[in-house]
Amino acid sequence: MSSDAKSPLVIISGLSGSGKSVALNALEDLSYYCVDNLPGGLLSDLIDEIRSQPERYPKVAVGIDARTGPDGLERLVSMLDSLPRGKEARLLFMEASTAVLIRRFSETRRRHPLGSSGSLEAAVKSERELMQPIRERADWIIDTSDTNIHQLRRQVWRNIAGVIGENVQSVVLESFAFKRGVPRDADLMFDARCLPNPHWEPGLRARTGLDPEVAEYLEGSERVRAFRDELLNFAQRWLPALMEDQRALVTLAIGCTGGQHRSVYLADFIGRALKEAGWSVSVTHRELDK
Image (cartoon, rainbow, N blue to C red; front, side, top):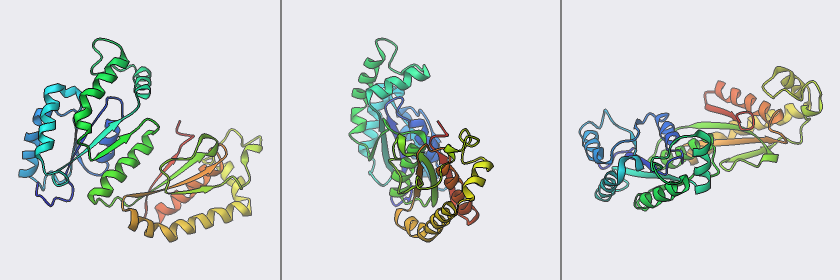
C-alpha cells in the first residue's frame, strides 16, 4: 500500500462483547474488505499482500483480539510499532464497562474467550489487562457502554470515514421518545411534542406513525402539515452545507413524547421525500426497534 494511500488498513481490536463485529459490518458497508479474528502472526503477511495488490485491496479492515492469544497480541504490538502510523494502518479499540460486558455475555449465554476457568468478571478483568498495550496504541477508542447498534455504526462511520476521507454522503432520520432520553449522536434535533397526539385517540393509541390511519389523522392538522413541510424544506436547504462540513453523514433526530406516533410519521415522511430527491437515507425508529 503506498504511503499516500487514501484508505489505510483499519485494525479493529478491543474487549470481547464491546461490538467489534458491528464495527466490522459497518466498514463492510463502506466497501471495506473485512476479515474477522485474524491471527496476529498473519498480519504482516496480509500487509504484504495489500502492498503488492493495492488495486485489489484498496480498503481493508481486520479484527484482531484476545482470541489470537498472548503471542499473537505481542506480534500485533510489534507490527503496530513498526508501521508508519496514519499512513498504512489505523487502530480502532473498542471497550465497555465491566458491568455492561458481564450483562451482555449473560444475556447471550456466550462463552468468554478467557472464561475457561474462574468467574466471568475475572475473565473480563484479565482481558482488559491483556489488551492494555493494544489500547495504548489506538487511534480511536470507542466506549460502547451506552451505545446501541445503530449509534455504534454511525460512530464508526464518523470516526473512520471522516478521518480517512471517505465521502459517505448519508442522512439518518431517527425518531425517538423524549421520555427515554435524547439520542447522543444527533446532529440536529427537532421537537414534535407541540403537534396533536394520536395517543389520545382510542382507535389510534395502539398503532404507530407508520400506519395509514395515524398518517391520515396527522395530515388532517394544518399545524402538522406546516411543521412537516418546514422541516423538510429546512433539511433540503441545509443538508448540502452540513454534508460539505461533516463529510460522512448527518443524523436528524425527531422526538415526541412516546416515540410512537408523531416522530415516527415525520421521520418516515421526510426520509421518503429525501430518498426521492436522490439522497442516501436511512430511517430508524428507536422505540419501535426495541
